[in-house]
Amino acid sequence: MTDWWRDAVCYELYVRSFQDSNGDGVGDLAGITQRLDHLNDGTPQSLGIDALWLTPINPSPMFDFGYDVSDYRGVDPLFGTLVDFDRLLAEAHRRNIRVILDLVPNHTSHLHPWFQASRRARTDPYRDWYVWRDPAADGAPPNNWASSFGGPAWTFDAATGQYYLHSFLAEQPDLNFRNPAVAQAMEEVIRFWLDRGVDGFRVDVVHKMIKDAQLRDNPAPRPEEEHPIKHYGRQVHLHDEDQPEVHDILRRWRRILNEYGDRTMVGEVYIFDPRRVATYYGGSGDELPMAFNFSFMWSPWDAAAFRAQVDQIEAALAAHAQPTYVLSSHDAPRHRTRFDDPTWGEARARLAAMMLLTLRGTPFLYYGEEIGMRDVPIPEARICDPVGKRFPAVGRDPERTPMQWSGTARSGGFSTAEDTWLPVGPEVARVNVERQADDPGSLLSFYRRLIWYRKRTVALTRGTYRALDGPPDTFVYLREHASQRLLVALNFGSQPRRVRLDGLGSGRLELSTDAARVNGALPQGDVELGPVEGVIVGV
Ligand code: NOJ
Image 1: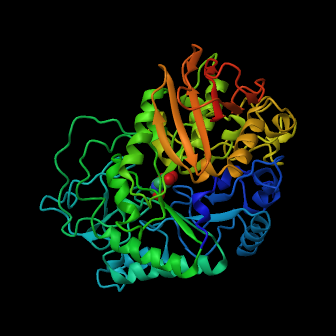
Image 2: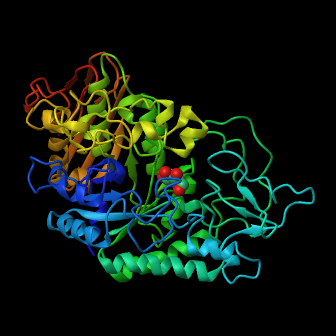
Image 3: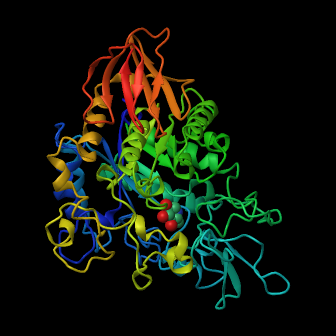
């Protein structure tokens, strides 16, 4: 086994929004296949990513845009067919791009045949595939658990007089993983896709899969806490997630991955304490190969805060556990927007990318960040996201708009249709792939340089990490492997800074976020950093 995922740069692709091939205004698999050369054509003229994560492609009534699966073994007709999928996989592999699928095990769609059977009668053999309970004495839900999307996590089903559990929408009933038949069915799903040749899975809300056996109330509400998807944070989630038995499931899944060899999994463990997240790798590395670390998505633009988050994760993870880093995803505002600034917005995007791609761990990019796509304001009438419909302020449509390929083609080159499922961003004339592709000073060119540099630099992929104390507003660290030693110096502030190379010898500039800066020996022996500049220096 090569553990390829330890060196990989991964790219999350929101399938509805990457490329539409049939003019219906929604992205699809054949569209992705057409655009693979942008991602990696084997040359530094492409982005150079190593693995794609596709958001859910299974048949779904799309109440939560695919995170409500009605058939785990198919492809939704909106996205194409299994044949289209096989073609995409083959074309991706031909370019050395691995493909990982989104696996959504915690819940199905309410239209999945399993749930349809389950709700039919209390005596149905599928009843126990989901979590059903009698109402409390006063007719209220069986306990106080809350849905992540607002309101109680229980819906009453009049036909059989019981409540069923849903950690998300009522249209997403939770499976009962305490039932061995459910656990086995999901293992068969995993094998189905591995047999088809996929390189692994991103696993949705892993920490939710098992709940307290007695369904005890969570401890009383606590004062409002900071939570990116609000309305849910008022409880201490003692009994509705992160239960010890989840680790048995993950150990079994890891054995399956090992059987197939060279496959991976990255789990969404949406828990704020990195020490809890660390447990999902398994004590001896026998559970998830990777778990997401979302700390940068919740971080202010602050050098000390970034350093603290990195140091925390480095301290929490065992030696075998591979860290991960994410700046943006389909669930939170894009970092180009979060970290925006009238003067330094673009410089900050470069600096953030340099940090993401030079830390010790597997970075996950989100489609469009390579060209600096920002969140797109969505008029109320066009809101699609179920969270956005309930709570417009935290809706997730703005970060899910069509990829901006061209400033001149209809719908930004995303679709031949005028009317795309979400509007194309208003900045498309300036922020698009076509315009940036041949401009050596563009953000896209910078991403390409950085990713291809990372690929050939073992200190970045496999080296150790050590933070150094630098001047205010800077985050400075060393990456070392055998005789290769790199200093990464990132200036988050708008004042120039000087990083001393005391004891590190003289330096050679390898790469700067400032495209105008020329590589080569550093004349004065120290590193002068411009405002919001980052550099990689060989020392
Ligand atoms: C996490 C996914 O990333 C999010 O998009 C989805 O709504 C929930 N899980 C429910 O599946």
